[in-house]
Amino acid sequence: RNLLNKFYELKAQGKKAFAVLIDPDKVNEDSFSHLIDLSKQESVDFFFVGGSLITSHIMEEVISQLKKHTDIPVLLFPGNSLHLNNKVDGVLFLSLISGRNPDYLIGQQIISAPILKRSGIEVLATGYMIVDSGQQTTVSYISNTTPIPHDKPSVAACTAMAGEMLGLKLIYMDAGSGAKKTISQAMIKAVQKSVDIPVIVGGGINTSQKAKEALQAGADVIVVGNGIEERLSLLKEIAETVRVYNEVNLLA
Ligand code: 1GP
Image (cartoon, rainbow, N blue to C red; front, side):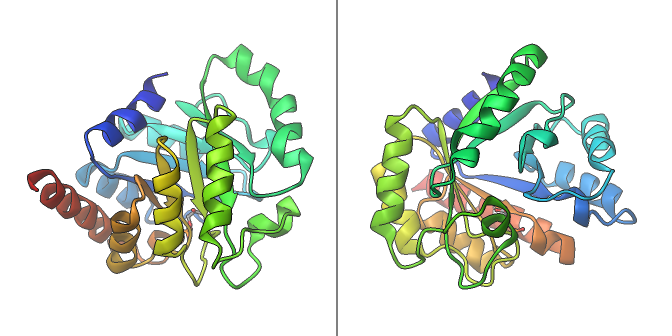
């Protein structure tokens, strides 16, 4: 339970964290080593690896490169049970609680359970909530679920509360990779106020300003993937935003 503890300790210290999402389908092989160096240099807190649809064969290689060159924990962000991998440090064991598709609520988890049990890999029970971003995202299409409406913070808050009451240990609110509209501050605030467990927020965070807004609203961890794939220097900018936010906040 080392990794879960890390999420909880950071939250207890009032420290925000930064996770870099690596989608194996979108890895730029030329700049990947640079991404690794930059992540080390900027003390990124977590790597999330995965996505709802993976077509590339380099997932294994991506994970082993991250493990070889850094001490940053690598968490699998699986789209389904076929994405399981035993080289990671932990698995975000996602239950898609915003949806009503039993396969993603519990079906894939049943298939994965014996494999994970044998592997001994840390399993982090995570309530995964997809939020509407005004466009259909791969994740809502593939999971065949309706996202939470963008302007319904109370639906998100009740969903997160139910997830916490069911014993889930993390909440991950996601507008979907490359979302044009990030999750509203009102919704992040409503969720954060409703649960005690750490709240991870991602989807469409591609500027420092958007990162700052998510942190101010109460996100404990922000996830950035697409923006960094498009412009590697964003990694540095987001890391700096999180650092400054933490410094100011811890001084206050
Ligand atoms: C997607 O939350 C992640 O599942 C990150 O989204 O790729 O838009 O940063 P982006």
